[in-house]
Length: 157
Image (cartoon, rainbow, N blue to C red):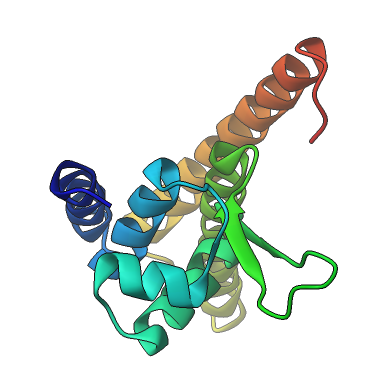
């Protein structure tokens, strides 16, 4: 891989780092966007980026959990291959929605706990629950529109 493409992977890594994720996760995502062939083994990614196999393994776990990359096997080949998911944006939206839903549920539990103890919740907690309910619904609508667009293009989820 040439230095310009590695520089691109580094810039993607810096963006992911600003999002609070490990830079290696973004570097690997960026690498998978521009590498040839687009399907790589963990060892190829490690060698291509000059990072440890352990770092690659941890980063790939996150990318696959978020639906941004997928692992697969090819008959007759021992090593699993990795590639960018067909629609990584959908994985990103699902991961964000999951986090928003979990936080809304926890905040709701906080409201219930305070109510059971006869305490009035802070205005911040009540407002946060309302804001999260709104954002959660908007994310669901966005995902519905995204999937509808995908179906209109002849694709699948």
